[in-house]
Amino acid sequence: MTVRTRMHLAAHFPGVNSTTVWTDPRSKSQIDFASFEHLARTAERGLFDFFFLAEGLRPREYKGRIHDLDVVGRPESITVLNALAAVTERLGLAATVDATFNEPYELARRLATLDHLSGGRAAWNVVTSSDAFTGENFRRGGFLDRADRYARAAEFVATARDLWDSWTPEGVARPFAHQGRHFDIAGEFGLPRSPQGQPVVIQAGDSDEGREFAAATADVVFTRRGTLDAGREFYADVKGRLATYGRSPEDLKIMPGVTVVLGDTAADARERAAEIRHRQVSPQNALLALERIWGVDLSSYDPDGPLPDIDPEPAPALARGRVRVADPLAVAERWRALSRAKGLSIRQTVIEASGRQSFVGTPETVAAELDEFVTAGAADGFILVPHLTPGGLDEFVDRVVPLLQERGAFRTEYTGTTLRSHLGLPEPVWKG
Image (cartoon, rainbow, N blue to C red; front, side, top):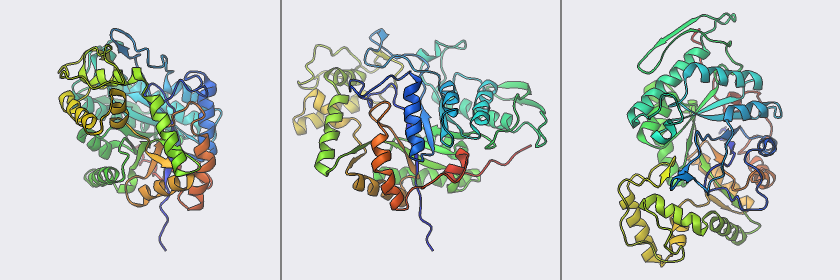
């Protein structure tokens, strides 16, 4: 008998980005605990695997001051998740924490504490940071080049795993020592092994270095690849790398971040999706998107007019704290070609060229498409990124989850208590 492939679902709490429609009257605070609690309780009501928090180590700046299009203020992830552990029972709790500007002992202790307090529901989304702007907030300052960032992250994760395993099965702390290129620490870890052995390790990133890092280290990959073909390519490539590290395809779950727009009819859903994109890309946001590529002040341009005929600056310095566009000239040419071909204004070009809603349709068609991604080998599940905080998941949980359950594509109850059990991941072999 063929075993039905079931998908995994996670909820991303919207933060500083262009996805959230903060001007919507239904949008609430991004800081108040009530917002986190609402989204987390909704995700748990929908039997999701985990709740996912991003991180911001410094408010982004634009033209020399705090970015006025960003929502200013983002609480520290693990502190929020510790509080959510008290108001949820089964939902996994995933914190994004930077491996460039933290230290292994301190972070391993905080994550192990979350795993103990939550009864085995903690996860760590490992990210690295690429800019000196963020590094200015830290004693060490500066930043690392690309190769060193991943090398430090790999040593960071390996050291944290050793710390989590450093107690004996009898519950006795043992002396711990690690000496490597980036870390030289010795002593005893402050906590016994946690309820799920080790917190789940999530990794985000689509680059070749990121794929290799994920294959070697991660339990879950958070990717941006939203189309079926791109998903299948990424899925096959990353899963194919696991054998090199003595791992099986089931040891790593691939979960793209996606958006969903629902309607009573297909036309209704398309209309809602277009409206959301229009609100996400305001005239001011359109010029900002353009300035990130061109790297110069374009405030004199009309968002409803044509794209600039000047070339981008090779080393833009307007925005600090944002990921730089890799090849501004190439992106500008693509956008110009799109604008010419379709007769689009600046704002229309940004809407057309930038991110779109991943799944748009009736609850029935969206459930079918999500299921197809998993059965076709393009994903093991999805991290849903709603455009409203904190009620953006309500409709999906009420209208799509029951259909996924009817198809046998999603669980009808939690069968375990830890995040590893939700994800079907084995508990790591205890080196102690």
